[in-house]
Image 1 (tube, rainbow, N blue to C red):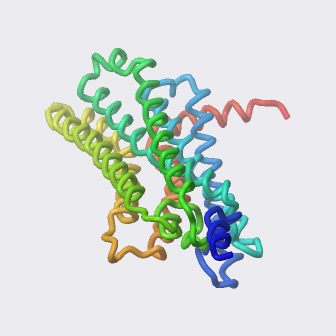
Image 2: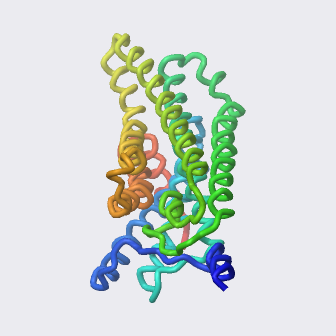
Length: 315
């Protein structure tokens, strides 16, 4: 009988998510707050995707990558946000076994993709500023597609391997200390040794963070050198303005990731992770389209043109 009970624990029908808070009086205010954040994020990123697709003046490599960034932000906020909102108003914060695996798969896929899309955007800015005469050749449509597709394929591979490794192991618990299915809380529920999975996750995480950050860092060192050599102030100002939005997004993302995943194990706290994860999964995807629209004259002009065209449509 004990053997059968252990077998029954290996594949739970569902998991219980602890959620963001267990205080009943905060459920309704948090629901309204995060629904607003998710709605603004979804509208902003969908708007950015549509705008960069239909506006003829935004058909450049920079906006091709921006469209991919908006798609990724929409993807990982949607993989977490709707289920979190449902759990605020549900009697129990539960998630099915298969949906948990699906959520983990898409979350990992989109977050790794974001790191390398931001790296591709840094490389694009490097070519535009440091090699302007070769820009259309170096950043051809085929090169842009390669720089976008390769991160997706790599991210999908890492995501599937991580999810398969975790969900083919035996579970001895079903209470996830988080508001969504993340790899670290799930590892604490496994019966068997987790060192192999932890090593794989750590190796991939270090490679993803370090390699993508180095691409961004080297690109901006070369950009800064090129800007300092410019003779005209307006040229330096224009170069800085084209990089400002991207640098802001990169700084916010890497700071949050470093806070979440680079803590020593002895001081690791899932409660702290929850707060960082809220910012990471919902607030950053909301901020990114705002940063690019408020700091970018071309995007603001495109929004103005789209609004004028919509106003001309007869009702």
